[in-house]
Length: 367
Image 1 (tube, helix red, strand yellow):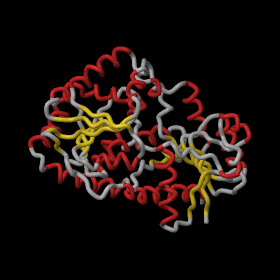
Image 2 (tube, one colour):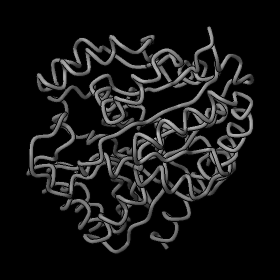
Image 3 (cartoon, one colour):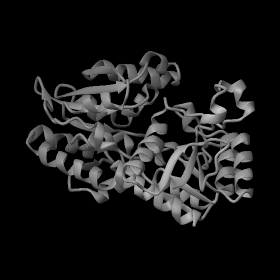
Image 4 (cartoon, one colour):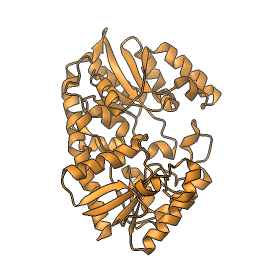
């Protein structure tokens, strides 16, 4: 058995971390971040898939006393992570850095949301970890190209979808009261992205219903500049919608089983959005929801792998409107587009497929 240890969200199990809330037993068992969707999607699901397939590779939370063939720093950087990575490399352990945000590209201007612009410290830390690693894994093809400028041993391993959580029945009620059900999920602080196609959603207000799976919207509004907040409140007052409180991925997929389409409008003027993965749409597509989305590079890549209507990329308001009209005029077309959406996720983004890809990259850099 070849073991791979994971450090997640900079949770280094060491004495200094006791002051940061680490429980004492974590010095022996490792310090997990099980509450983070990134943790179970990019670590736990992959670990379980490799174990179930009887792979020689065993993934686990990093334990200081155990020897590893490789240690993966999953979105983990900073002084403690860099120091541990250096010690591991000195002992001959392969160090892998996993990046899922573009902290590398400088952003000039005022972002609509603070987390969408990296600080100078984040940029410095990300570059240091990327350069110090034996190899790098990026969560989108676009991000991998950026990381490669700092470390040529970089690959892309996409976010994955655990089909064991997929509900057995999907597309049960894509239209309710004559309205197409339009799904979106994510942090409430990112709901302002609907303003990227505001005119289209407002023009369809009597024919669609937004289903928004998110967290505390009122709290999120406080993070937006005043102009964005006022504009979004007017938008939401004009478009029929239902807010659902996000609990977990099984609940999210169960919601998607009702049917309709999944959307991801985005402003593409920040490195943060350009480097985003396809997970926002791939989860819905696994439940046979065709995707209608802005031209985020990862969505465009997904479209290139898919059937004709699994992913519709919209660069203009006219294209957004045409995408909706296809399903509003011919509701029966949802079935074929939904099957195409399911097929591309199953073929390229299913957990077992991605787990093999991840382990192959580890093996290539360890041996």
